[in-house]
Image 1 (cartoon, rainbow, N blue to C red):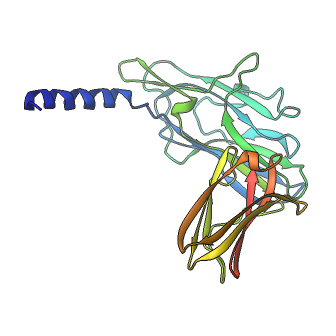
Image 2: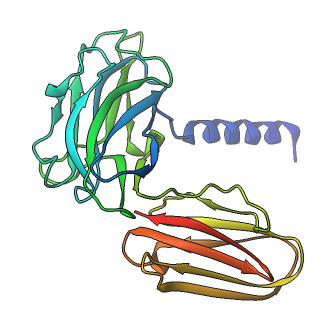
Image 3: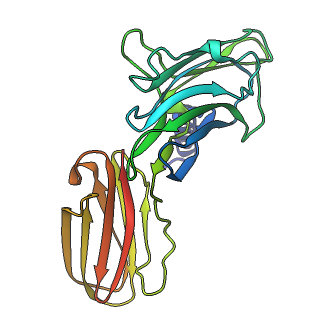
Length: 273
């Protein structure tokens, strides 16, 4: 290929590749709380990264109202943000609040340090043991809609607009009366990992075998009933994996995944929300 043509092609490829990359906005994340006690209260702090020069912000926070009872929102750490910016009319029966905040549209906007919390939601745990609830950062398309949107202001006064798919979000989770197990193996266990866990669409199971073995994977619900089972004959030593789809399970809730290979086993909690 002619050097000039090749260089032109590479330059165009780099240009179009660069402009096609999606913008990444601020990150938002709630904590993960294990072993919550029925009747206790829990604080869920919404923390942020790269939240700077903001002039407008709206989103919806959702949870399961059968498990968590909304109490209040407090500990505001964002200039001019207060309870008045939250619509809590459906917080008790439908399990969501709408946040719609708008500040001064001129530079420099509002900035907060990375890993700071901008507010905290207080819940009472009303679900029984083995129940659970995600606390989601999302949007609501019902009338009237509340779209997820973060608007930043540039130094020249123009705006950058970030939508739901452009902002990394880590949903919170409260497990009532149980702990979602870590991936650390104990003695005589098979090393395995489940990620993400909890999950809503799919979770990746990965495990390592020290030697060839007939292997069984089965998942049970909270009543001990097997809802999914798969066998692998003469699986060789090494790393293996499979995808756990939400359709393999039943309703959202707590499940138990057990992996058996020869004389070794491993069991992990698995949560679908």
